[in-house]
Length: 213
Image (cartoon, rainbow, N blue to C red; front, side):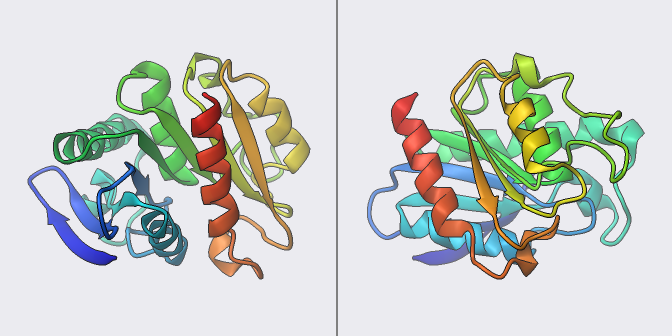
């Protein structure tokens, strides 16, 4: 496996390239407070690459504009366009199934893009999906989930204040496609701090859900 820079007019990130012919590709975006160097993204991309995937961890447009600031709701559409750009960059370079996803905000924007335009992805990987703001379960971010038509894997900490495991199971049921939930014991919203590395279980779940689709 090797790690290469991918730096174009529209995509900035790191490609984890497996040895031999790739079996597919995956692109993962960071959360609202991070960037493409987030530990959980490095773990996931390393593991997917070990299993034969070209794995891209990349910066969303809001992070490219401002290295430290939060995303702006009024410009979220630009972040979804950034997800589409990352998908197109991988489609141009590699064949096989393409998985799109990300951590928290990055995963949410990716899922919204795939709900709007299913063609960019063959599957979704949502890490620490922010189902609702902490302490406000009535403000569920689930409106678009029934429009997702590709297999979707959620990975969530058992103590994540952005959504309990039971709430995530209910959200899964809204998606009219195969879904899976990888539970990370002892973890909150920041999966980088999980006591157990969740990457192997995540890859296994994604491979199983891709094969069953």
